[in-house]
Length: 273
Image (tube, rainbow, N blue to C red; front, side, top):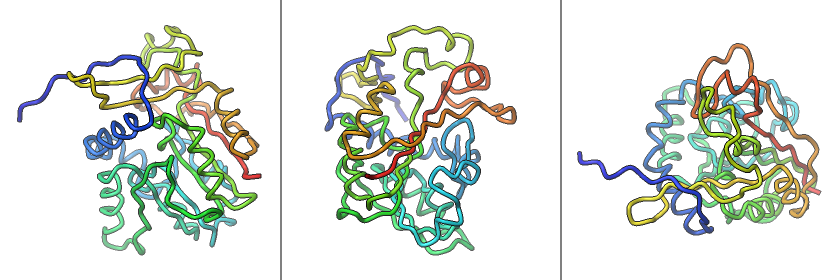
């Protein structure tokens, strides 16, 4: 098979439509490799918040596991729905949403394995345009799903608030904003700041025609807090997981070396007002 030229990495503007199209295409093309590379770490029914390995079973950021029974939960950017599967095992009623058809096919593949309970409800949709009625869910969550790849994350926050019932909890994890000032390298070269933390220009990989094939967006901590507040949500906690001693794996720019010196993940815990 003849491979095309490698995408060019650059920093440039990328709007809502271009970002969405690039993300859908990238995850459809790379879902198989992603599940092969990270499937063992993620498990089939484990709820892990990020590369550090913080489990929801331990952290209880959505609330005590015993209190999840019967509660409706929307998982945004669900991938193969590992988090939703864990929620279902606690008695919750999750819906797994993702932009990528291929990622959702992996979710269905796991659900069809012998001995699995009833398949999860799966929805292919853009996080900025949630196809649900107002006040449809008790809880919402996203573990590195959707938000880094959406141009208008303020809209995502407003959409989540819209579909949550008052008092509902919304918990999401993203790359810790401080990481954007450092090269995305797991070794010593990733320990020296190389760009401005305040530069919000998207990271874009584009093909030889200049069309984006991968887009990732940066927001500062302050940006995130203001988006949350403007959406009618209240931030009740910000969790920055420390790198555990047991975790010796590298995952992209995450590694034990960097993780023990710099925060890699930020988890925002919010409540709908």
